[in-house]
Each structure stands twice: as structure tokens, then as C-alpha cells.
Image 1 (cartoon, rainbow, N blue to C red):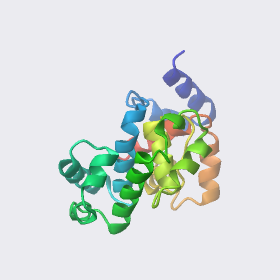
Image 2: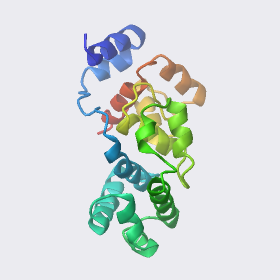
Image 3: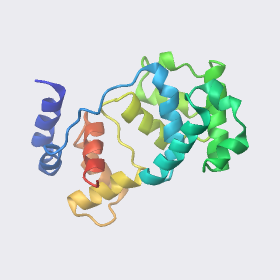
Image 4: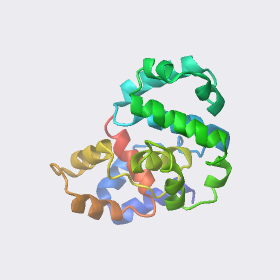
Length: 198
């Protein structure tokens, strides 16, 4: 049985609502990225903080046009004002520069992240200015593809739960009760919730 079949079998046993929706979703995009891709991935997550996907894509596109290849040295080679001019808030400019400096100086070693637990990965990333739990959780989900991550601070996930389970403004306790059932495949369930809103 492959992982996708295992995930569906688990949802079928513990949560018929999630199972029904998960059957409609393909998980082929959930492929871990290589360490050399991590920097660009985190830059994308920084740009996307508290923005709609559409707006984030536009700003990230401008950012790519500005720096070309997304590397620490390329980010450090442009001015803060140039980064600001692509549409990033000053806080995100400072966050991206701090990330580039920490990676360039080896304070943050991407080659070690795969050897760490989810909690340890988050601890390493949160050392960067402007990176909090949400950005760390997105990195764990989309870049490392860790299977059991949920981001309670992600508004799209909360909206997805509200829509899928017919709960208006679900409380933290309700969210916890629902998401606990999905363990150890909460990342897959999160993917289903996001896809349900497209």
C-alpha cells in the first residue's frame, strides 16, 4: 500500500467527512524539495505572509525579476529600497535580508534541517527576524513535506474547516478535536482543506 492509500484508509477510519473530500484530491505535488531549493522556498513564504495567494504571486514574480537566481548573495546584492519597491513591506524586506545573511554566514545550515524534528526545524527558522510559527509550518509542509503538520494560525485552513464541517467560526477546541483525528497525516488533511477552496 502506498502512502496515499494509507492516508485515505486512515481518513476513512477516523473521519468520513475528510475521507470524502480527500478522495477528490491528488497528492502528487507533495514531493520534498532539495536543500538548494530551501532558500527560495522560505523567501516565497516570507513574501506570502498575511497576503492572498494572488497578491503574493505577483510580488514574488517581481522579486524574481529583480534578483534573478534566488540566492543569499543575490538578495544581499540589491538594496533594501529595491526590495521594498517590488511591493514588500519593510518588515519583510528586513526579514529576507536577515535570512540571506544567516544562510550566507552558515548560522542557518539547510543541510542539517532534514535531520531535525519538526520542533527543531521551527526553532532554527524562528531565529530569523520576521519568521514565526506560520512561516515555519508552511516550510515544514511544502518544502520538507513532513506528513503531520497543521497550522492553526492559517486563516484558509480555519475557513476550510468551517466550510467542510459546517461550523461557523470554529473555536480552538473544535479545531483541535477535528485535527487530532487526522494524526499522523495532518499535512495531507491541510492540503485537502486548501484544495477545497479553489
